[in-house]
Image (tube, rainbow, N blue to C red; front, side, top):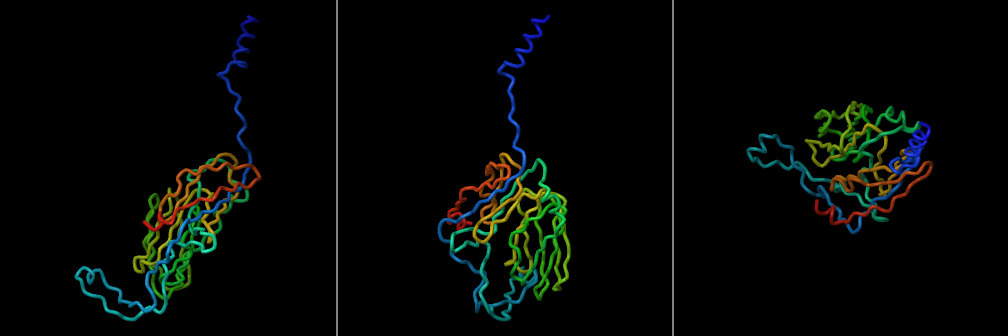
Length: 268
């Protein structure tokens, strides 16, 4: 019996089928990166100064082919801001970088981050601020229409109920929130002023960033270990669907520059 017991211990301790697993990394770290466009992206405009302004038509008038009446001319250029590239370093603004799925513990500094409302403003009938927006599930979004006209807000969601409402020309806010995370940013349009467009990302965790004017981004307090992120931009869709980053505890991981050929943006 004694020999049998020692033989069993030998199997458990020395058998190659039993592996000693290393402890998973403990703690949190930060992630930084930059998205750069290689090549020139020429400026595009919705209209130029002096272009005619036509009276807005009804659907019936459009169907009947009635030509719109000119009611004035534009007093300034309106640049298409869907692609904003830094002239200094080629950085791409308004790209989303985020964890699609999160498992683990949220850092104490971020646990209450969803309690702070996010703001979305219509600065004019043609301008949305911000163009790219991130908020968490059930986080309140305050809407402001600062333009002199009624604007439309049409949110095309996948997992949440759609939103299609009018924003009166007043500065008081209205409020929205969403209970479910989305796989990718939702397009938000104005059915009255099609030049105004934005993209909103809803996640059930705080680990996301939007690239700044110089293309840089930072996600703070990511759990240590291997993390898989997604990169998304409105003119391309997913730039990278499985970007791997190794996060070290109490350190900042800096990714190599993420480069996008200008032709990839111009083809869209």
